[in-house]
Length: 421
Ligand code: EPU
Image (cartoon, rainbow, N blue to C red; front, side, top):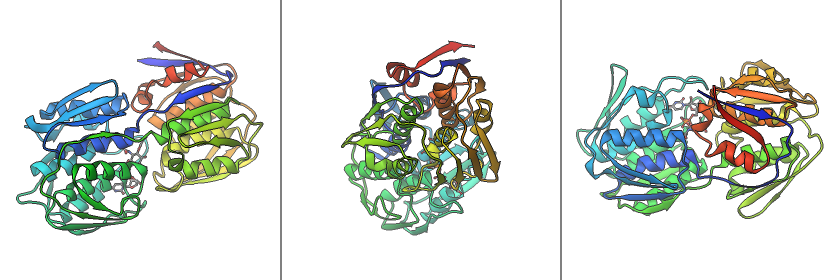
């Protein structure tokens, strides 16, 4: 196993280029199964989750070629429609293969994803939507088995759950509906930029989708979808992580290849803390600042504050002046980073789904353990700002979603090394 050793206190400065969005790439790669021929996708991040999805596709008989962030997917040789436990258990996002498989091939057998480190991860909305389109769904020996004896049929589907809209349920149902007979209406659809990117990709393939970016999607089914070439949007969560690295190390980082509009709620909160940044068409540059102020943050589906930046924001607020609160409304148990941040000197208490953060003057380096992907990024940020040395074990979590993380940080001036345990 590998770990990071960070010598904290280095001021980070310079330019960092943001990679393609992992969470846009996963459903778009899956949706390329809907095409007749070979799809070519650019700006695909070279991270572990993408490689896991590629392994699942190869297992199914799909031809895949991945080189220098370009991925070619040719489903013509597909002969298995199953995602076994070994794959799904390491990457829950593979569930987004379900919709495309059922729409195009009429069958899918998927290991049930189960919960994970960020809490219970139900799939009731995926199943409800698929059933509404005419899929027969059974649970057999830990597998979800979907079958469509005849062509899927468009329907009116309310896709809201107890925690609001669902990103991947929307992706699955939208994909499935593109080839269904007639019209589908999805109410309470997710409006995340990753869903809009998926809709743009599907539309380029010939799908008829209306209303992407809103909570109501209308999809008119078509008979075939053609293969296209497409480039994925930048990763807004990676961008937010580097922006916070800039403030936390009192440096000036020019975060390039971002869509500032995708980070609106995050940047708004950052501004409320009293720091500033220069926002340009495709970049955001942090302006070094003294101590920032506390704020209250509530995570919500887009355009609210993203849950995927909650942990990193908590690192930032730990060094704010005053008391902040962070309320997690998307994954109410997503607080695994709290104990590790406290180990580094933060003062965070939990009250159910709310964290109360009393600002401290500094972090002090310590031994820590990475857990889920974003929690691990939060610990790296704290280590960069800390006095002394921070050791972070189990960094494979970070490799799931941050492309060249330590290389990018080193290029900005960080003292971070990857070593074998
Ligand atoms: N939910 C249900 N029923 C469902 C599906 C979801 O109740 O059938 C609930 C969830 O338990 C949660 C809420 O709805 O409380 C939202 O979950 P959502 O379905 O939107 O999450 P997801 O689609 O499984 C994606 C991202 C996550 C990100 C969430 C929320 C991918 C591959 N994953 O997951 O990303 O946190 O949306 O924005 O796109 C990450 O990148 O670190 C990550 C976890």
